Amino acid sequence: MHVDDLATAACDLGTDNRNVTRDACGPEQYVFDDLVRWLGRTLTGRAPIVLPLPPRLCQPLFQATGWVLGDTILSWSEIKGLVLDLLSSDEEPLGSRALSDWVHEHREELGREFRLYPYRLQQR
Image 1 (cartoon, one colour):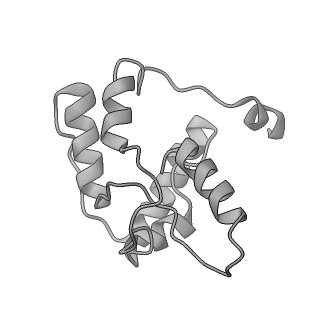
Image 2: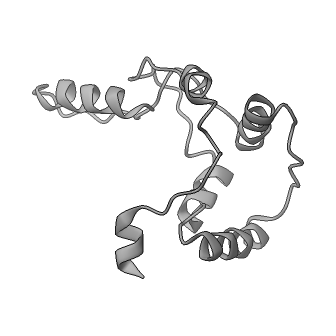
């Protein structure tokens, strides 16, 4: 979900007097490996190789990559959420901005370099 859509939804729901719980989701939903393949094709013209590995094997690989980059790639909670299909929703989307539109708008700058956020540098 795009941050602008999330901010709008938070403001709209914040003025609602009802006690409601909503899923924060945009108009598109992806299966993780399909998203990785689509991003690869869209940004590089080639589909990346996606190896189906057990979650417990993925965790140390993501941790090692994150350690090298100084960032978190996928946390264990996110991996579990993907495995349990907790990161998708059957609700009507709260957001209207599609990830595919955003990626196409920013495709020239996406994945060209990796920048550590200043707060990450301060934590080290």
